[in-house]
Amino acid sequence: MRIIDAHVHLYPPEVNLAPAVWAEAHGERHWATLCTRVRKNGQPVQGFPSVAELLRDMDAAGIERAVLLGWYWENHDTCVRQNRFYAECVRAHPDRLSAFATLHPAAGVEAVKDEIRRAVGEGLCGLGELSPHSQGVAIDDPVWREALVMAGELGLPVNLHVTEPQSKNYPGKIETPLGDFVRMAREFPATKFILAHWGARLPLDSELGSQARACANLFYDTAATPLIYGREVFRKMIDAVGAKRVLYGSDHPLNLYPENSDGPQIGALIDEIRGVGLSETELSAVAGGTADKILSRRS
Image (cartoon, rainbow, N blue to C red; front, top):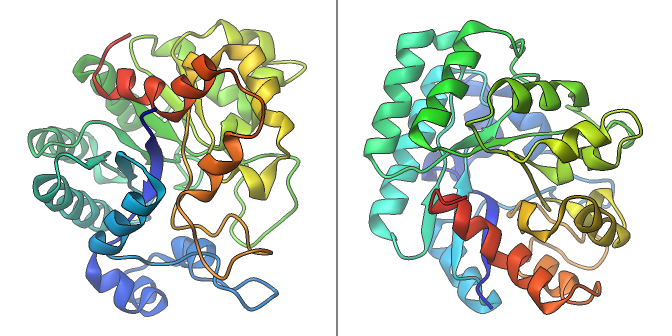
């Protein structure tokens, strides 16, 4: 069974060296709030592995490929640096790493389109993890809409951050209205959207679920599952949309099991998925089959 982790974050060496200091110097306070804080038990929310450490951990977990996702940065220059770093990673390890580009609509339509073209030319194969809500951008913003049109034209899947509205409050939590994702899927049918964190279980929503289930261009990843949902979410979501619309994603290097581990373990979630009662066909699709088709730009 092929395992593709479709939701992994990685940062340039200068970020890893002193994350909070770097964030303050570069005006990325929202990222710092989410990613550099410490839990009540004293454990960091996440780690900051190097490329070599990520590859080592992938080998140990039996993960064939990782999809590196960007972040919804507050500044265009940070997006550009992230994209160049990911291009370096893909060039160095094309057999193990894929990467999505990030962007900020405030840079303007030409800068955003130029950055997408450059990223694609450097081997990046999607956009995300994006969050217009976190960046203070309306979903009808013309630059945002141009980016989504361009993604459809170029066959680039778009990973979007979705916050579970019923989750407890935490520092940096941003509301992401579920209706916005249905609207985007409908208005940009040529674009494949991957809604992170199960899309806050959008297909199960009493009001919007039927509309979401009807949008064949909406996909869902499993990122951060143990921190948000119980194991029953796998069966309920797969029954609602089918395994071919679900992608395994860990949200590495987030520590998904803080009660049991001192740090992130990239293979722990896939180990849990093996025990939730999926059929072999369903497990194969979730673990890597769905991601493989999307990354290969096949329906």
